[in-house]
Length: 386
Image (tube, rainbow, N blue to C red):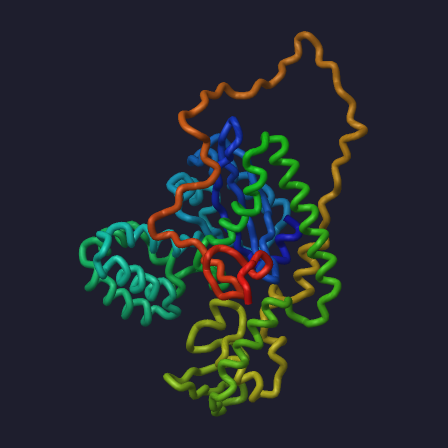
């Protein structure tokens, strides 16, 4: 929790199933560090993903927030029924963002396969979700409703725009529109999910301890002010706008002349009319061109939560080892109550180890960098004659 205070105030929450004898679920909350890396914050092992378990998990998080006063935290989830019901009871004043990828998949499933609307409607919905101004949202929404008809109207009826649209979101989202980081946590614990509960707990502890130590060591070698991933993004944004013209309006106000449209940038208020700077907390290409014209350093206008200093603070709190060699075996008396494992009944067929994938969910294609083929191998395992 101390390390999380140096991360962006966003928690990605989700659940993943356990594949051991007693089944169950791991529900977790994860954050992103200053280098866009996974930073696990909290997790719990429960019997199922329902409202009572989600409320228990969120209440424990609320207790920890009370012990460590911090900023207003934004939550992003896949809109599970139990979570949506429990969240406003525990965090009534915290913003809750819905994963856009899950919403788009749900909307796509409402249209028949082979119809052009099955691909067109999700695209129009994406335009609405990524709208950075209310005017842009209303323009895109009008097109979406005219194309989708009653199906789209019914889908949007119980979906508040404050939970999924950039322009109306009432918290700091830093441009995060999906719950992909929670999927990264699910993949991170994948090798542990078939173990007994005690070993799952210990495995997560050891992986977290090793990860914190390794990233702390790596950060000592970084010489730039920004983390490597953010530094690369800064250079890419600078490259995009290097041919644009800039006109000065006032001391801190400029107009940027792009190929398609013009943008207004105010360095004093850190504002760009494209909306990207305000949403991401990171200067867009328009702002970077103006910063160069103004003669200032781009690093002065980057949010502190993207800098190496915050990254080092995040990983400055190690997890201490838990030696077990000195533990004694206690002789519980005859009247002692010993907790027994739950009664289970073996389900039919061979146990599944992987989750069911949706029809529209695509797997990443691996392309060999040596022979250029996409048949599942990489440069290291390539045997093709060159």
